[in-house]
Image (cartoon, rainbow, N blue to C red):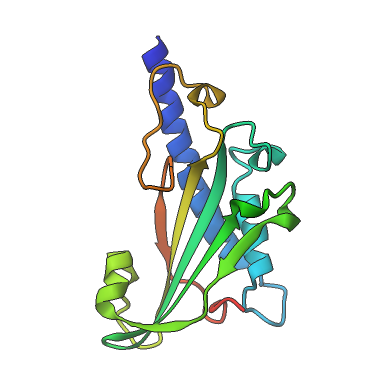
Length: 188
């Protein structure tokens, strides 16, 4: 019985993160529809991240003191093809946990500057980021939960421990690649 419970919880966690990726993609495509300046800002990314995590964190439980023992992160990797082997590239992330946020307005994130890279480095991020035409853009969205003061019982696990993918104690990491509307990126 405990194994069945844990198996269900693991799938539930995975699918909530995957649905968060779709929510992020949807909000990105629509958030600036009523604005004259369509370019996304770092503040937009904070609000997108907060809104997309509410399917698991129904309250401010994503913030300190982290009652579920995990916190929510979103990484954005934007590329734009300049020519067959040259791409513009920008990486952004939300939240950066060091400031111990208590509300969406306190979330820290990061926006790297736009750099130039080659096709091989873009493909190493994700093969679907490779664009077919000059001027095409792609956005890789990575959603994950990171452990902090983690105890598997806080998430309802009895026997299983959620799988960790990287050195940063990430529990799940679904990815999604989209073609964003023109003008949204790079982040200002």
